Structure formats: structure tokens, C-alpha cells
Amino acid sequence: MDDYDVIIIGAGPAGSTLATTLEGSGKRVLIVDKQAFPRDKTCAGWVTPAVMESLAIDPQDYGNDRTLQPIRRFRIGMMGQAPVENDHGDIVSYGIRRCEFDHYLLERTHCDKVLGEPVKSIEREGRNWIVNGRWQTPLVVGAGGHFCPVARLLGDGPGGHETVVAAKEVEFEMTPGQAETCKASGDTPELWFCRDLKGYAWIFRKGNYLNIGLGREDNHKLSDHLHHFVDEMKQAGRIPSDLPGRFKGHAYLLYNHAHRPLVDDGVLLIGDAAGLAYTQSGEGIRPAIESALLAAEVIRSAENYSEKSLQPYGAAIAERFGNRAEQHDNGWQLPQWIKTPLAGTLMRSHWFTRKVVTEKWFLHQQVPPLTAAV
Image 1 (cartoon, helix red, strand yellow):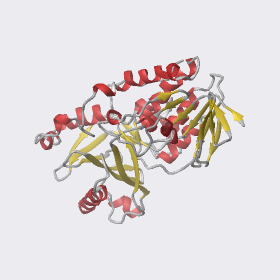
Image 2 (cartoon, one colour):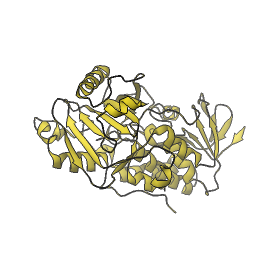
Image 3 (cartoon, helix red, strand yellow):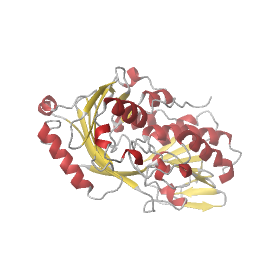
Image 4 (cartoon, helix red, strand yellow):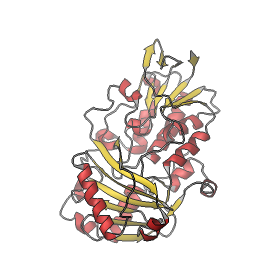
């Protein structure tokens, strides 16, 4: 049986960032993921300059042989009414394909990796965890998304009482004919809020790739909402009339509504496994990256991996993202105060959609980037 100081379950952005940040600490790290990489990942797929800075990625270098769509504008509206379009001038975000982005981050790590093998068992033996009967470690880190098996160790895995966001989307490479007729512009993602403000849909073009999806705070009639939106966008010529393939589903927790503990004896959760997606937008890449950076700092300095020794991670998350216990907003994408008859008017305001919806809720421009501790 192989011994490791840390075993990370999940090789997405959170897991790979943690592994990379722990390099040089002297700790032996193993990443395990049920899928081989590169792999498809259901995600609209955009990252802010803050994420690129936190990961020390040079956009020019990354974009040499990968999809990197600069975003300078946003088209925002409420379904059933005309949208507004805001020009931010500078690049405020980048469109990426998760199959490329996640593989790139994983390739930068130099730890041991076991890919294409699902985690079937995590058992406690003394102070160690035995994973799949093959590896043992005093610390197992859950980085496997909403359905991460490590979350079950903390008694709050899938099927709990938390409000889960359900989404469906499709991403495909357009044919020359589709690309020519598609009205969606690469530098201008489109966000369309549901009239009940319980979710939103998006159209996001990344070069010749097109991503279309819709997410809501539950899956009640999710397909009906999606089909209605897609039909409207086809009629308006925003998207091709002949979409290929089927829409794939995924789920995640919003930060304000998640109740999962973040740590226990020998256990720590990061990224979507911890339920860290931004409440106002559902975006999870930046919280995943930052949680990994915060976790790495605590793991480096922890005397042992008891719950008490790991608790500074929970405190760091609360300091960075806010204290869940003090946030009483029951809304999903939007705070309760906007769920009024004024919502339609606000969504027609250039100032509101730019300064509040885009720059504050989606881009978090008011929050400086988090970088790895030296």
C-alpha cells in the first residue's frame, strides 16, 4: 500500500491548483479522478483576469494553441423584453473550453496521478484514510465537485437538504454555415434572466465554439424553461436552428445556501465539493481556485490534520467569501430586494446591468486577486 501525505479526490481546477501550490512543501501528494484527461466538462467556461493572475497564467501564451476568447461586452436582459448591451472597453474576462483549461492545469502538476479510476471506498484506519484499498493518507481532500465522495464523509453528500442549482447546457463546434449565420458575438456573452428571477440562461460564443445553457435553483420544469429559451433564440437568429447533440446536466451548491462542513479530522473540502459557487452568478472557477490556495496555506502549516488544526481553513473561507451564518438572502442569482415589480425596469438600465449585475455579481471586480502565499 502506497503512503501519501495528501490525497486529492478530483483533478479539476481546485484539485490541480492545490497540488501545484503544495509543490516544494515536501509533502507527497496523489490526485485521483474517475475520468481520464482531457475530458469534457459541462460548464459555460469563462475566467476573469483575476483567475489568470492567481494561477500565474500568461493569456498570450495560453491562447497560442487553446481557445481563449477575450470578453469586452455583455448583452443582458430579462426573458420577454429587449436586452441592453454594455461595452466595458478593456478585456474583463476570457472564454475558455474546460476540456483544455482543466487539462492544462493538471499537466502543470508534478505529483502522482491516477486518472480514469473512480473512488469506490474511503475507510478510516487509525489516523489514516485508506482509499480504494490501495493508498493511505492522514488527509483526504474533496475536490470532486458537487457529487464528490469525500463530502459523504462529512455526512452531507448528494441528496441532502441543501438547495441545489440544476443546469443544462451544450457546447459544440459550429459548422462554417452555422458560424456565419449565428448572431452571437464572441466578445459579447449573452445573459438572459428568467422572469421569476430563479435562474438565467446564456449564449456564449468562443471562436467557432458555441455554448448554450440555462440554470435554475431547482430542476422543476428545467427542460421546459430551456426549450422555451432555445426556441426563442432560434427564432431571433441568435443561435443556429440545427443544434447538434443533447444538453447535458450538472448540479452545484451556491455559497450562501450550502451547509456542508468544510473540515473534519483528516478531511477538507474545496471548490464545488465545498459548495463555494458565487451566490449571485453561480460561477465556481474563481472560488475553486481561491479555496485551493487557502487550503494549501493551512495544509503547509498544520501541525497535524485534526479538525482543530484544519479549522483555520474554514475561517479563511469565511473571511474571503463571507460568513454563511450571517447571510440571510434566500434568493438564488439575485438578492431578495430585486425580486420586485422594479426588476424589469432595472434589467433595462445600462448602469444597473453594468455596475451591479456584470461588474459586481459576475466579475467581482471589487475583489482583488488572491495569490499563493510565498
